[in-house]
Amino acid sequence: MVSAARRGQPHCMKSEAGVEAILGPEAHTVRANGDPHAPSQAHVARTDTIQPWTGASGAGRADPRWLPRVDYLATGGTIATVQDDSAGAAGPTLTAEAIARSAPAIDEVADLRAAQFMQLPSPSIAFADLLRLRDEIALRIADGSAGVVVSQGTDTIEETAFALDLLTVASAPIVVTGAMRGPSLPGADGPANLLAAVQVAASAVARGLGVLVVFNDEIHAARFVSKTHTSKPSAFQSRLVGPIGWLSEGHPVIVSRPVGRACLSVPSDAHVPPIALIRVALDDDGRILPSLAAHGFRGVVIEGFGGGHVTPPMVAAIERLVSEMPVVLASRTGSGELLHNTYHYPGSETQLLEIGAIPAGILDGLKARILLSLCLAASPARETVAAAFRAVGMAAAPER
Ligand code: ASP
Image (cartoon, rainbow, N blue to C red; front, side, top):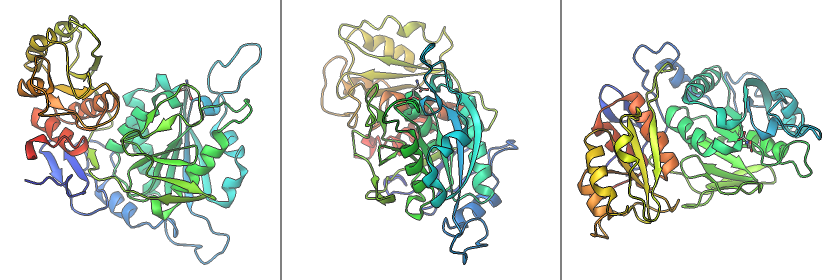
């Protein structure tokens, strides 16, 4: 059977019923049972009918000074971190309004509503923060925002943006950005990145693409983007597919539209279970694996060599783990689809898939861990996890 992901349609995964394909090219949501903060169907319907060039009601459209409303939620990171010569950079302190003022050209692009959502370095962000952020974004879009920009620390953007992509359903653009160079450094990139992010969030061409990451005048899909350098402004790359677009003279250009988007129905107060991420290295005997369950891990992502391989001594431990928790197999190369049927030696991808490892498809270990975490928060059913990886990771071996 050809899955909806293969046909390029978004999915929404319900905790009660596994995976449910949904209908149109615009994403919809399923209200989480008992979740008072989840957007209602009515909100989503209204969100999906708002056009970014008309705003919430269309009022004022005839006025040539009218601009689309964009909400900006600041969460901290280098974009908010001023270097102090004596003490170095202790942490983010600049407010959302101060950051927005550093890019005055935004006033010509959007009616910007800046708000401080939290003030953290991004390694301190937790899943609970992301669920709150998801709810805040949904409320603002339901309230008439044409698009939402989130700024945060760059260290974890490849994970947080992907998590938001899995958790949000609106068609309105949601754009994550930040800065590689702080505001007090020569060539600070925060103001330019924020301006570009607002230009994308205000644009009709960016609707229905899921969560986007905008840096260095490039537009990346959250599912594909990684931080690939410790300090360069060009650190954000989508190694597998390249950026899906860019900004030229302030205008967003989209050249490819990702398929296989999915959303997970995770309640606002959900406990996101601990998932281990294990990177395999030369001559690793896998001695950590038998202790994962005792440490409380509820699942594991194994980043194997090359196309998805481990050392021979790890195989028996992985087979035992499969009986205890979902085991997802990804590649440590950081790009390309996991192999399914190329090698047949001890520790090969063929052997690991045969003993029950779930292929991560095109997702790298970090993104596979986010998907497995949110899947288990939505539903513990093993078939839901496998279906999610088929849909989002495009791990399509069974259909070949
Ligand atoms: N360490 C910082 C953070 O992620 C890095 C940055 O923002 O670029 O918060």
